[in-house]
Image 1 (tube, each protein chain N blue to C red):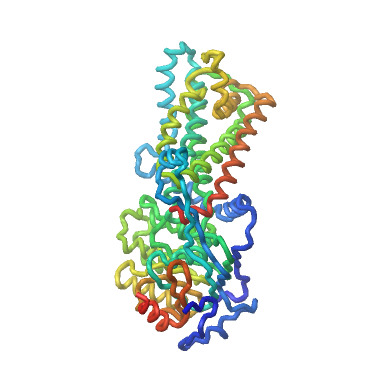
Image 2 (image 1 turned 45 degrees about the vertical axis):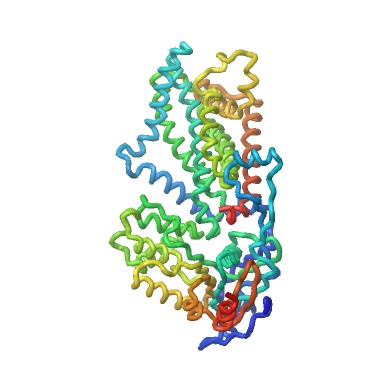
Length: 275
Length: 269
């Protein structure tokens, strides 16, 4: 036996702040994070002929359909396709990662009541997988930008800030939803319906100027409104956001992440007998 | 009858547990339970959907009751002991293992575990059918908390033990259940753990594999690992364990030598 090494000692009475302990554990288990992202990316493409190209074609096709249909409605210009795709990308990231957080925790339920692992690993790895898909869909975005002649400025190099805020917001929502979905079986299905409605309430296909003024306050209740516009500013608008936009968007992202992380880690100990 | 907290002296064949296994830190106990209880709140009626919950909540009809899955458990398990838990379904045996695996936290009292724990899963839990054996070994190892470098180091030994070199780059979905079980067992038991948790899982695979896995368990036991097992198979418990605890309705009824405790448990039924 390993008599010289010091043994790890677990003492259940030494309990720190749940949210911070979870943070420490997820760092310790970073190899698991990597392996789970790898698993999700690899298995998604393994049995399809087009493989990784799907991630790029999928948003492109959706964009073309939406652009053809709605450019008639809004009588929009050529660059409307870029407008749609630059809204669709953050939306897809959000809806995919939050749904994957729910599915991941439900799947992991059979594991986490047997072996210890940080329970946030499912939501965090969902963000990792979403990030890979997001980076891949940047390719069709820039192709579309070249074709339609959208004028890029230096602001495009600050896009990672928008992606970071988006990831923080999505992680917070994903953590919150998955910890509720593990308790109630119908949350996952309800969320899919909500997502459909949420899609049409977000500025993805419509432009703000089409909204009658008395309704704009409703649009502005939607956090995705700020996150999508923020991302779009760097790419489609080609401008640097104002300080106010940074503060509002960053604030929404931070509050979501903090709330989701704390909410989740305070309930995480119950999961083992809920499942 | 209730002798919790006062483990009886154990006649241990051929192995002076106490002498051999006191480590430089001067302690001989691997696991201690002090006044441990696990309680959870559960709705009176089983409410599965949020819709139902919301309706009942509006009607003010959501009532919770407290269920004590374990209460007042005092227990010391020595280093190198093979310790069995017996009792009816729902007696709290698995809850006890979950506390040691730190999957659950006690509501009252204190659990202390000294040493690295290896939980034996239902073999193959966590495997992905589309990934190859090799990829699954790395994924499974990560779930058990090993780094990539540690897995690189372990990989050859794992495949050697599982005898799966010919199939290691084929997807798991092409494996038989016996092959999957072999690979899972090999990952979980590659190096000698300080504490091994075995919850009713040793009956998988073909006969040759069962012999091989039993041999590895004996090797761990003789090498000084603390082994905790839950089983309904009294022959296995009698054969493997130094001491046994009997649980009933979340309470520790008795702990002592296997034959004594198994007899007491049988008499109670």
